[in-house]
Image (spheres, rainbow over the protein chains, first blue to last red):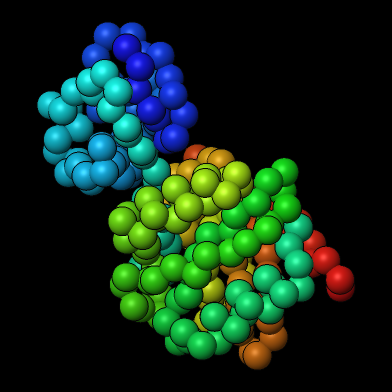
Length: 69
Length: 132
C-alpha cells in the first residue's frame, strides 16, 4: 500500500502497526518517539494497536530534551 | 556545521534573553550549512533541563520540509555550565541524524560547540561561524 511517511510517499508491505512501521524504519527506541497520524498525535500506548492504512500520512520524530537532572 | 554570524548572534541573544532558563531550538539547512534557525519553547521552563513540545516539533519539521531543507541540528543553552553535553544530554540524545549544538553563557563568555551523539558515543562536530 501507499502511505506518506515524513512527507515522502512510500510503498509499504501489508498494513503494519505503528510499532511495526517504526521497526521497519530502524527506530530502536519507539518509546522515545512521537507519532502523528493524519494530523493527530498518538499516545505511545497506541503504537501497537493502531494500524497504518492506505494513503495515511504518518510523521515521527524523536523526543528532544536534555539537562542535568 | 556552518552557520552565519547573524544566526550565531541570534541564538546567543535568545539564550541570554531566556537565561537562566535553558533556551532551545532547531537548525535547518542542507549539507551541513544552516540557513535558518527556529527558536523553540522549553516547555520545562527550567535552568537545568529542556524539552520541546512534540506539537511544536512537528510544526517546525513540516515547515522546514516545505522550504526544501532538513533539520540538521538542535541547540540548547547551558546558562551557567560549559558547552559540552551533560550525562543527561547524552542519555537523551536519541536522534542520530542531527548535530547537538550547545551554547554556553558561562562566565559571560559565549561558546558554541557541536556534537554527534549516537548510542552514547560522542564525536565533536566543528561549528564554523561564517564571517569570523
